[in-house]
Length: 145
Image (cartoon, rainbow, N blue to C red; front, side):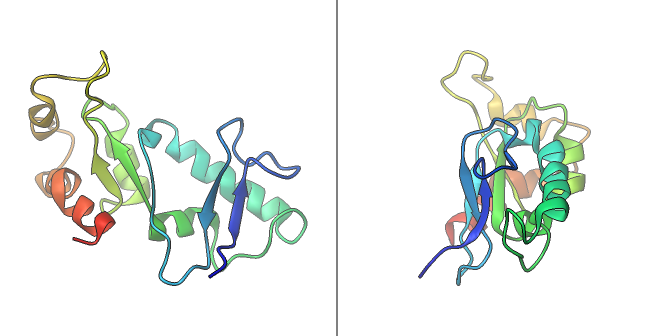
């Protein structure tokens, strides 16, 4: 089964803006599930930029896709967020609450330990329903559990 999709970091468009090269699969059956840790810090800009470049270069430097890159990302990708990320409510609004999974950043020195789960559970700017998805339900969907 051949995976075709958006080339990030290749060609003349420099899709990634300096990020490591990666592929978001657009036409794989069943859909390829992709996750990237700690992407939520720059995700809103990156999705906007992918859509902008896709509009400019569709058919020139990238093949035609079934939907804009941001929509394909929402359908097939997950991001992890640690509990201290200030932009988490905005990422949930942009991406939706079905695509964000929990990250502890342990054992890195900037991670919260102990108490990393409580740090997310105690956030007032994230709904209880979103917290439940981030802390467990979405990981089940990502891993097919």
